[in-house]
Image 1 (cartoon, rainbow, N blue to C red):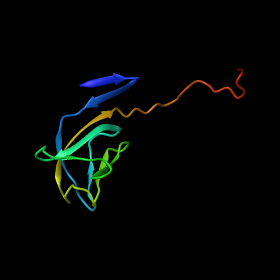
Image 2 (tube, one colour):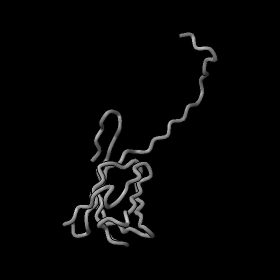
Image 3 (tube, helix red, strand yellow):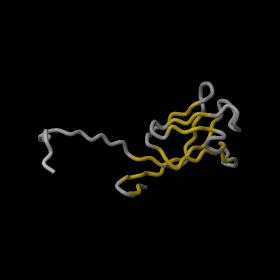
Length: 102
């Protein structure tokens, strides 16, 4: 499902299981430009809190476990999130005025 809001198309993904690896533990999601992140225990009974339990790098799609938070080391968690497509705009052709006339 994709939503178009203000020119940004956001797709909502289903819940997927991911495992924090390394120290303090990171998960690199398959998408970038993520939003509306929800992290729960693998059994879906415990909802973890952003900032307290994990941090989010929205641009690169990376979650980092907070060592003092409630998520155990090397935990497998359920993650749900939305994402916006990465778009690269290239300018080509045409000319740029050296002295704008307006």
